Length: 213
Length: 213
Image (cartoon, rainbow over all chains, first blue to last red; front, side, top):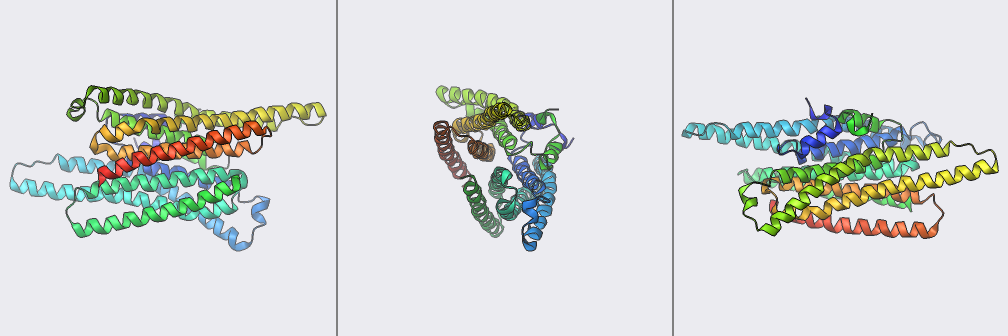
């Protein structure tokens, strides 16, 4: 059974168990999905209402475009919740490969490297999708139903936690690789994503706090 | 059916819908519960292992005490996921009370005030319970299974998002109250919780980043 199909309570129990999966990578994807769903809820509480209809056409179009995009991000992040577990299982399978002969050692080592890259690319995708949510949220904070402003704020917090949390899982996997050029490239990518996410989150939260003041 | 018993995917769909509940208050509680469950997983991956058994007795005791406490916080936060919806329903019920006569208006007004206070006390409890998770996590970051350090980091991010997200829901409800002494007292409480949560999160994250470096 997929994690995403489990009852919430059961998901939390499996998370708590001593099994290493699901772990932080799946939680980061779920955090993003929760942020996307909350943002989409604000869209649902906004479009069609008087205050929204009174906005100028470009703003309305921009809002609707971002609304559709955030629903698509939720769908993708739901998939990533389970994909993170698959990637870890792949790594565990490689770890258990025979390592008696030199040939077996070489095959195992290559399989482990490939599995590590997969275990790193999945949370990197999660981080990017969570960042994409943050890129969409400003118009919800500015023009969404003001009664739901706290939901935009919580949505930004969840998306941001998804970014930073997923990046932890990228960084830890980089540690076991040896290709320095690849490592440096990915590290720079992580730093760029985190910095952009931080700035976008701060922007959405400051609009939220201003509307709450 | 309780939210906590719904499949994760369905929870996300109900969240996205145009119904105002569940909203950010339930997500904040769930975020805390995810943080508590991840922290408890690190506990399960730590206790009984050689590195843990080699620690001095007071550290082991401290770890185990926090481990038990975090499991209890997960249980309480699971309850708060649904309690947030109940509090909102109570408010909606008060909003729909008759308001023809002066007497009806007075009764409705009092019911709305009481419902607002309940709708504010629930997320305030959520914020406090999420803060309690952060208070427990340092020993997991310092002495937990080092292979699960990213899970401690993600746990801190989720607990922190739970704190700040829940506080948004306290603040918005304060806006519709009139008792200034009560408002000021609660505002100060919110500020104190947020500042403490921020400092604790930074502490756990800096240990996480140091171990990943």
